[in-house]
Amino acid sequence: MSEQRARVVFLVRVPAPRTEAFLAAYEQIRHLVADGVPGHLVDQVCRSSTDPEQWLITSEWASLADFEAWERTEEHRDLVRPMRECFTDARSLRFHIHAQTPQGTPDEARLAAATGL
Image (cartoon, rainbow, N blue to C red):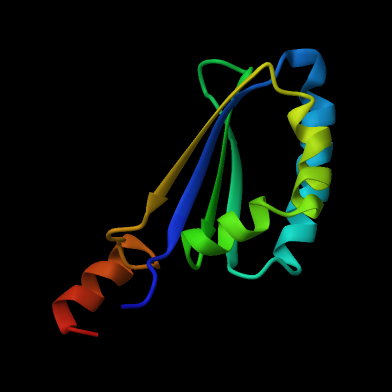
């Protein structure tokens, strides 16, 4: 059986005075990860609409093993250190992706479902 894709979720709190440093550190990390960490597919950083100090970072991986292998490296620890220094609280969750809606617009998805494409 092949490994399932995985989603890693970080719910973090970043005090307002640290926001600029947090986003700068995220920018550095995301480009380095996207350009060469095996198994990395995509990531996002999201800010709460109701609490400006609450952030959500999600990343999708070809497998949880790919993420965990990278997480164990010294390179990972060095890369994320500037970002983690901005957090006052952090929670990490890991999930195997069970199901997903088709990509594309809702009209494209309905058309694909109706036509079997």
